Image 1 (cartoon, rainbow, N blue to C red):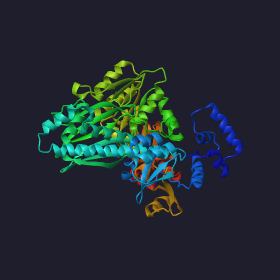
Image 2: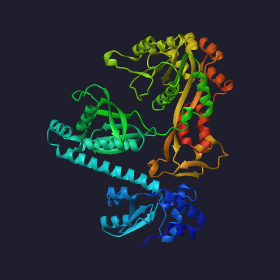
Image 3: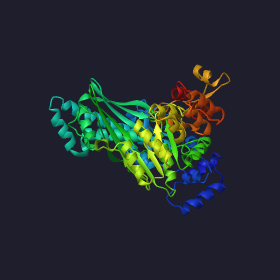
Image 4: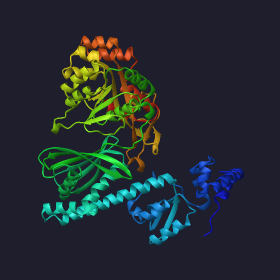
Length: 560
């Protein structure tokens, strides 16, 4: 089959001019190896969508979105992964007996020949954007591999059902990475990383083993497995994490490192005994997720300005507050990354160390050896520190030692579990710190939440429902909402954005804390005098921008 001149087609449909074609040809001659159409796109003469539209019209091919298309995994399996990856194509479904295949380059006739040789039956080709096909290949073939690993592990569990579980355990762990349980656990880690999961939960139930993943803060059931897989799965996780595989009556903690797509990942493992066996939670400690507004610690300009005002002091405590999984530690690390550039001594006490930062002295607590947060903090004070970061203020001893450190000329950064910024003051007094000590040591509080972002791929403007009208007001005519697609696992959300409120502890607040004024009065002062924007107000602003939804506002600010 003769190759159709792309330039002529694009010119015929008015996408590019003759001058642009000639300019692109000159560039391509100097940079050999680039597809002509990719050169035109890179030079800004057209978009990929314009290219696909023109080619589709000329060649009578349908243009679809591989991200939005309801892909049939049975179709995906018809084409080997090597062919799909090499040619950037994927089978997406069937039209009666015809296999429908999405491609980004209809001129790749070698790819069509490979597919025709691999597939027994008729094939229909449709066009789709390159990146959407690439993402679909990564996701669907990984999903198929994971399902295959689960099926193999289930089959192995059934085969071993009548055998000794001890021999099953020995066999699974002694045969290397090709054993079903090993492959299965590896597939969970890969899928968790690909889905940007923060945690993987392996939960024994009465009759089955359930695997769930926390994606964008929400738990999603991923797999249901044979109950017989639980002992070897638990043992595999324990051995990787340096735990005692014989101890099943007490909780255990550990960690291990693994490589996923060439990146070294640090995984924290936690086990706890339940009535049906040990539950396992694997947490990704270092992820490469993109952070919105990373140059301002993930904050809006106003919050960033206030935090910088707190950090300019050489002493005092700044707390970052919020529930578990609200990104407190990530924010702390971004702040430390900025402070390490200064000629100062920074010491951290963490459990565990989640990110290694060159130039910072990081201490990992070890309660079994007697190294607690409080003891580590006392030791850090003897290391001539300028800045001390305490991963979490959990008890009264740590809180009181932190206060003394702040009063004696150190900048202390730490986290607390409170609903809002003002509640941090109440929490400190509840932990036994005297009000006048709180007033003299506390510099500021940053309250933080992570709101799920609307998936940009499937976002649409729709009429507001009753709850949205109640919160946004009757004047709201349209709201932005994710409809659900493959890229967001049909949730309508993809990624998260941090939301903050910042309390600056000034002279008036110090007076109110010393006099033990109610938290409501301090909050009122911060809102009226300091013009502190609440978490709810900042979320409403994000809704107006079309970044998040009323659903997220209700979820994150319930009771506030």
